[in-house]
Image 1: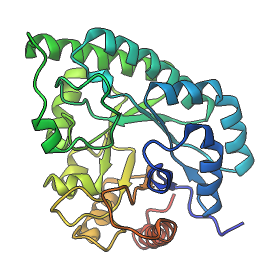
Image 2: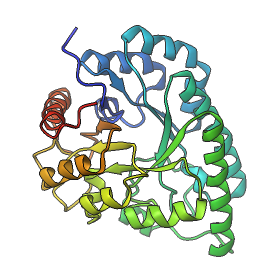
Image 3: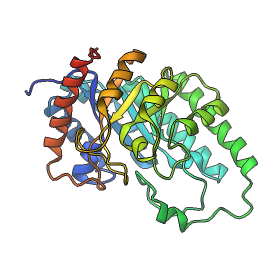
Length: 309
């Protein structure tokens, strides 16, 4: 068994996504967990990508929990990827909420303390067969229009109520609900999250600070940490050069890490750090080596800045 990294350092699910495609074969979830743990991670992220995968993992939640226990690991955050929560179609939102509750039940079975999803997807008219994607780029989004008869005021009210329900469901299971900033979402930075969180008004609605995505969106990471100090419990950590969406090994991009970790120390952050390196958009030839290098580097930073839990 390899040397174990700090339990503060989580192997994000982008690892099996990068190796096996999006989404990875859900029937091989146990093998994915074994592979991540085999690199020396105590803390693992797991994703249910879309309703079918959430349904499968919910059905097998006991076996998954047994596997996590067997590996001697924890899953602090379970990701429920449900873009239809923000659909302009009320029936699709209702169906997504049912899958969301399923995901929350799975999360509690796994011992997680939080669920996570991308921020609300823009309410465009996506084709019925459109796949769930990690990022919806500008060119693709520009090809779509609004649904016929779309009313922003009506939609915003329904969207707010849907996410209030989601937060209430998560609270019922003792979970926080992290929203992740990404391309194609209505949440890409600190301001957009705070605006949305003010509307929803739920104490368990938190922000998943993503260093690479926010750097690309020109969101100042230090100011983000200061403004959201009570709204951040989980960081997705990777580097970015500022020109496009990519998730590089820390040190291979343009993020100023000293000010980032100094600010984490100043605000007393004691949450988890997800190594979130890779993806089809990132030119990495050896993803295992990239994760090990990132985790070793992060452990050095947490020790240097006295952030180790």
